[in-house]
Image 1 (cartoon, rainbow, N blue to C red):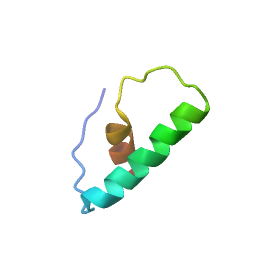
Image 2 (image 1 turned 60 degrees about the vertical axis):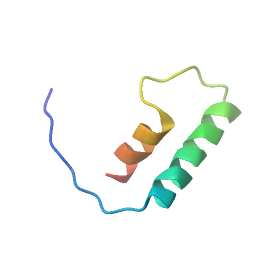
Image 3 (image 1 turned 135 degrees about the vertical axis):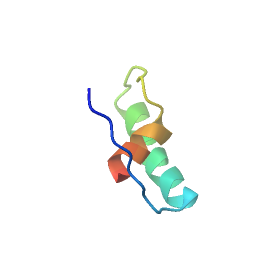
Image 4 (image 1 turned 90 degrees about the horizontal axis):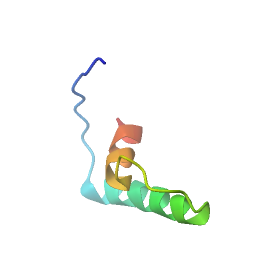
Length: 47
């Protein structure tokens, strides 16, 4: 697996907003747990 660092300038408010959208979606579809938290998933999406 290849790894690279990404530097993203974004506010914690933006990260929390996207993480909230992901959380609501998981609840709506009754998704099982994920390896990554909604916050980490949001960071990956925004990067």
